[in-house]
Image (cartoon, rainbow, N blue to C red; front, side, top):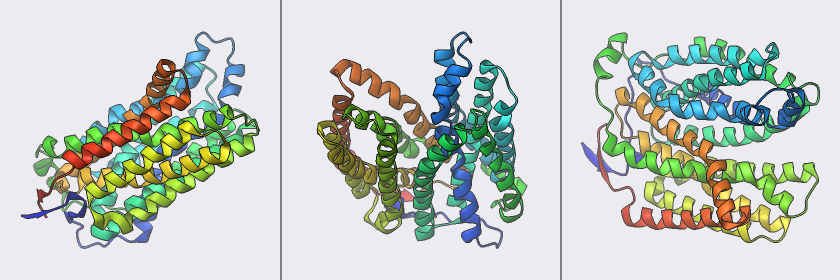
Amino acid sequence: MSTMDPIATETRPPLAGRAAGKTQAALLVAGSCMPVLGAVLLAPVLPTLNQVFADTAGVAILVPLVLTVPALFVALFSPLAGYVADRVGRKQLLIGAMLAYAVFGTAPLWLDSLGAIAFSRVGVGIAEAAIMTCCTTLITDYYAGQQRNKYLGLQTMVSALAATAFFALGGVLGSISWRTPFWLYAVSAVLVVPMIFKLWEPAKSPAHFTTTAKQPVPWRQIGAPAAVTLFGGIVFYALIVHLPYVITGLGVTDTGLIGGAAAVASLATAAGAISFRFLAKLGTRKLLVGAFGLAAVGLCVVSAAGSVPLAILGAVVASAGTGVLLPTLLTWAINGLNFSQRGRGTGIWTGTLFIGQFLTPIVLGATAAALGSLALALGALGAACALALLAVLVRGPRLVSATH
């Protein structure tokens, strides 16, 4: 037993004599982009769906659900996916989920009912829960120390860049037909082939799961990171969802400029995420203080901005902070967990993050209604980040006893 900051803890997994390298990392990071694809790819075709299914009862509710319901089911099913990953195995669940993602994701290519399309998105969300949980768990299984920090930061960075790319690609494909973007979901069926041959189950034997998965999840350890991640998820997705509305509110109608602002913010998120591997040595508390501090300043600048350049500057500052925030929260949550607990721990963390994503438009919408504008709501969220910073300083992550 040793006492150290949880972000620096290394719990080396049983890898059966095999060493993971860049190929395994590339496959797991690419797999982690599947939930991002599901979240943003269809946004550009939502107005078209409203027109195509204009005669469908409840179209005003069903069309937004096509975009948002996967995130809800990722939130609901990630803890269960983590349990299955610990009990049955990471790779087996990941392969099945990637195939299910392709089936449910491409289903709208031949479905003619809006209700059926919305229902197929439930399957997408459940598959995404397993994919995200297994990919993240395998990264923490395969790598330790600086390598782990590197690839967790890379996971967030690539996801941020993929969001920008998928949004643009969705618009291009959507101009052909509202169904065309759904073809991209088939990429998981292609990606699963090298996963079958290049990934392996890190457990020593199948019996490992039936004996060690009985170990309970240490809620005292993971409860605080999960709670902070719920709030962190709202902060992370706030500008992803609402920056276009802020830019539009400043009088911009050029979609190219609006998309460019979102792209610049995504690049700042990516920069923050990739810097995590170099900053991790500072420890959890200092990184959380820095991340929430940047988010607080950035959101307040966006809130008060009277011009587009100032709004973009604020978005860059806040996004750099949230880019550091996610891998910091994840390492805080899982680095002290035993191998047999890590799937469930990652599932719980993933679930709270996606609950935050699902709640973001609801929380900011309600706050905007109460305060009178979206700008004031973002300012209030910035103030909440400042309070979170103070809370971390007063009662932040302490030195813990961790098992190697």
